[in-house]
Length: 453
Image (cartoon, rainbow, N blue to C red; front, side):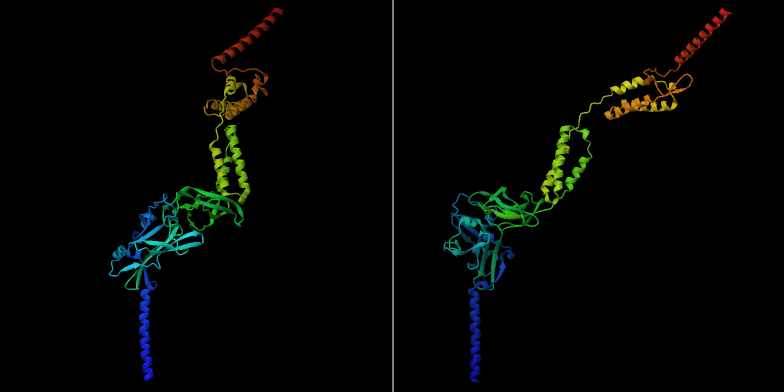
């Protein structure tokens, strides 16, 4: 019984000691506390974290927003931190008191694509904190600050380990916008490959736009030559995102790979088809030759098939379109002289002198020729065709002689010129003349008969 009681008492003592020990450990190691994001309390931790550089204080809000021009400072100028813990306690609006947790508060920066350096805060005793590298124990400099990509600030409850708060920023690219030594373009070595991954060629890209060293503004990949239509992004490297490259890496060139796309010839084929519907004779020789040259080059691109690049197809289509728009209409001189002479010549033809069928064909050709002659918009082809049709119809006129017989030859073929159709008084004059001639002949015959009788 005594042994059992002793064991029971010992057990209670051990449990009590373990409980006290656990509480003490929990209080001493705030990492076991339950963390809450300060933003859930509508608190922006950036407003309570500042950096002292060459005697000037910059809030984190300022350095991540508008930025700061520090190009006049030596890049090795040290950077110190200030944390407004009192302001955070007031903003939390609790009866608890919180202090900076130096074991968890940190900053980090990249020095290579796969190397990260961590910095911890160390109290200087003057209201500032040294930002010390875990790598070599050196203090953060202005140059280091330009490459910072992550900040995590933690505060813990000094009277209880049950709660703690943190604020956090973690970006792939640089967090702060500061100008350390000037503005720089984004640079990249772009490797162009085919669908099998075989290298086609490389391009050294340097953006026209420039940004401050450490600025997180990106350059779109679409600004690379031939990206978006001829090639597509195969992946993106460190210090970059799916949107593009970051500014601020002087002397650093990112590696980017892009894959060739099969070309689309729809636009090019459409403009080539348009060329087929043009009439060559309507344009000047020089402008027409420029179009033919563009078409020849475009056809060479089409003949490449999938071996062609989209930019080649687009450029060829654009060249043909420019040549079409540049066509100059040929100046055509309209000459109706021969047609007018023919119309004047045939005006005196008389329908009674020709067979009805041949005259009908001639009259139709004559009327058509007159219509073309009076048309101010008639083309030279229409004029020439009308003249040829009129001459042909005139040549095919069949004459009728006094006995009513037809002849296969018109006055034109015999070289004679017929007068205008005879009508009215002129017709009667001809009849009277014929009768007079016949009467005179009869009188002469009668006179001869009387003489010999």
